[in-house]
Amino acid sequence: MSKLSEFNLLKSFKFLKDGLDYIIRLIVIIIMMITVPLVFIQVLLRFTIGKPFTWAEELTRYLFILLTMITLGPASEAGKLIGIEFVLALLPEQTQKIIKITVKTISIILCILISYYGIQLVILNLKRGQLSPALQLPIWIPYSIIPIGLIILAIYNFFQVCKIIRKESGVEE
Image (tube, rainbow, N blue to C red; front, side, top):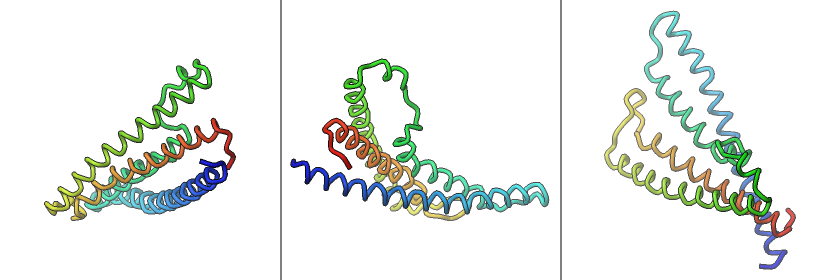
């Protein structure tokens, strides 16, 4: 692949990643704007009149799961997920790159595999028509959060592998 076409491909990846970053940030802001007042009102109702909304806890739980799953990719990119960095730091730089690429590739494969089975579970629940207890929301909607989050994580890991390889090959953004 020529340097120019590789450069254009990397620009396209960066454009896609920036768009995904923007969408994730927007979703996080919306979730926080809903969750914080909802929990506050829930606590007030529980301690003042003793009767909180029955649906608020379930909605908050689903939003928290969504928040966690969609931010896995950005957290991975920022190096905020659990890892064993001290062992990696002891190794030569070239070995570190090989291990990082290998770990990210295995992570991509696992994310895709788990997402596949998660989608199968979503389809099964879609066919069954099961509803959540309080919100009466089709249960396949909250179940779809996990495959979506893992696909996002796989995409971010793919971008990280590209970044490591790009640094190795000397291609600039």
